[in-house]
Length: 117
Image 1: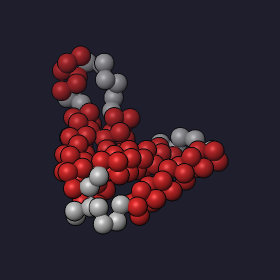
Image 2: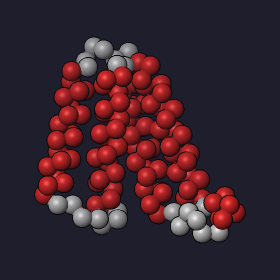
Image 3: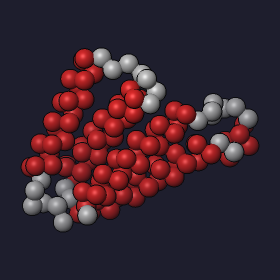
Image 4: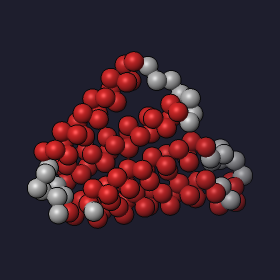
């Protein structure tokens, strides 16, 4: 269950980032424009859900495992979303970087077996 919470938090965080990217200009329309910006409001909800999932997960697993996995997982997922959905560049060097992050996530997950409640 703890790993699912962490995974949910990673997905919610990445969805929030994608929603912010697609939201109309934040300054347009002043305060009324902000309140009517459904993508921005939904992204806040996603960030909130990600935080709550992380907060519960970190109570059940070591912080030195939960935080790097959560952060690196979100970075990798946002990178995939930006390349696939937004067609942003994905160079071979970026591929190596994301691969190293994934390797680190796997190493931390394996090293924490037996420490997760």
